[in-house]
Image (tube, rainbow, N blue to C red):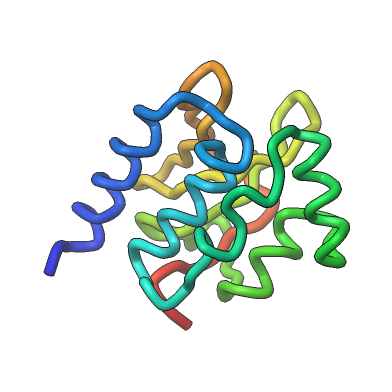
Amino acid sequence: MASRFRTVESVLLEELAKPYVYGVADCFMLGCRTADALDPMAGLVDLYQGAYSTLAGAQRALRRRGCKSLAELFARHLDPCAPAEARNGDLAILRLADGAEHVAICVGGRFVTKTERGPSWHGVTECIAAFRTGGR
């Protein structure tokens, strides 16, 4: 069985190498794939992949599910934790300078998200929520 560190590293390398495609290979799907890799019973990729194909479509998909934010959606599937308590592979929701929410993965004391311009690294002060991965 691979260690948590190796599992997260593998998912990040694979997902960050893919071209950015909404609903297939974006920050949200990076979070879903990480959660699924650490708990195959989570089933988040199967549940959400392809549910949207644009940023506006992603917002509509959230609202169709009765959610106003990514944090609200992930709270249905994962246990919340304080961003400062996030461990390797836990998910975080960032609010970046553009005002948008992004899903990020905790890697040590930093958080990485996938953007159209490539990986983007952030500190805990940019996190508005965090969630434990690896089962409830």
